[in-house]
Image (cartoon, rainbow, N blue to C red; front, side):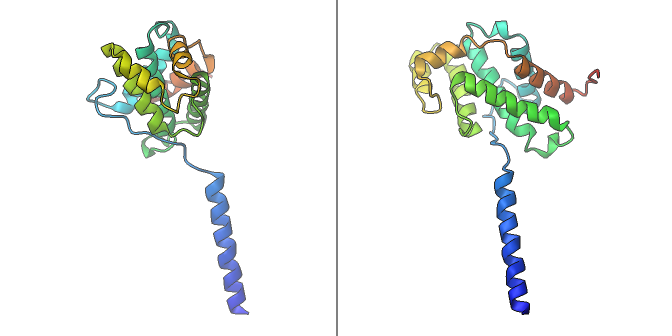
Length: 187
């Protein structure tokens, strides 16, 4: 009798643990390559600044795929980081959730799947930003041909150079960046 109760309890515990693990998986999170965002300071805050500024001043990204790539990489990086790093646990959950939603929206715009690990996205986009700035078209084409971009090199390049205004993305990045500086939000 005791053995069957113990076995049943153990089986139920393992089953519940497996269900809980599959029900909540941490978002994919990247590590920003050293020097990628031209800072030797706080990479997280720099990434939030870049994302908030870029999506708030989206006209500056039009025709500037290097800036757009860096901005999208910063968003992708911070969407994961805000939801996995202990440093950001006190940020309101709605801000963190909105960053994940913003990441999905921007990825959809560029033809990057939800399942693609953030590290692959960040590495490709930071590489693209550097290649565009260096004028290295061969490297740009090689990076745009990576399988994470499902729209093909030409369409991806076109979309990257012409990201539209995305109000929800602007809102998410602005609030997350503001929180990093401890701003008070009205309402």
